[in-house]
Image (tube, rainbow, N blue to C red; front, side):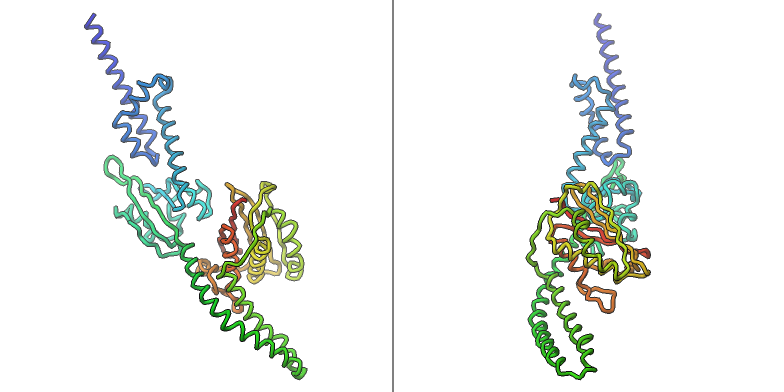
Length: 407
């Protein structure tokens, strides 16, 4: 009797060991492609999870071991993804081949991509810079982690990288955490511009007003052959100089504005179409609107006059880039995760790649008679309403994308 009992216990022990081994095999298979491979393998080595959840919890005994652990992995991944998405910094994982395995919501927002669009693609495809400039790849190849490294290219900011190793000590993942300081740098530029603008307003605008007044007075006394010179050149040039100062002040100071709920589809249909009508006829422009029905009943919070100014600036920018007899403009609206997106696309000459990073900088212009302030003002107005604007360009034209939060 005793011998039979001992033998039964031995058999149960053997059976238990076989189940544990089987579970560990399943665990390794499940986690082989997961970003949590290191953590989950440690769990399997300890066998803590298997013994406590599989044998001590009678409620869960009906579930197969691999199902329990698959559920555990799924819940853990969702939890970590939610944590990553809560950060305003960029968080991105690559594997040992430089392939992106995970990134957070802030990366998707700033790069104008969907949440899973670049999963499984090389990091250079996302950043569009050479491998030698990508800090995560430098860490991957050299094994050297970066601590608060300053990035001085278009994506200005501070980056930290960390290495995740497998049980054999080999690099399996590299994590990058990037603090984007582009907005802070832009704010510093605008603050300095504001101080300059204050001096310009007092030292230049007043003399211009005086000169313009005397020109108007002299115009009445001028011989007929010179009156056209006053009308077509002298006075308009003074007005243009004054307009430059006015635009510059609009960029650098926080002007008073009155945001109100606006349905963007109604704004285009009932307001902007009529506003653009005369200029489209005079300049041979065709504007097509693609307004999403999902935006019915959805509002943004924007000063209406400033919203008009935004699209007037984009419209005149497109006119300046006109290369064909007919200028075609497409305006599209859609919504994604409580963000309203507006794209403004033209078929103009496009912006040279070397100039594209600077088009929103004050006084940057590729036109001989341009002030370089229209797009700067546009960006400022959008930022004042917690929105963003970006641009892509090529031989077939330019597309501006505006993102604004739902009210």
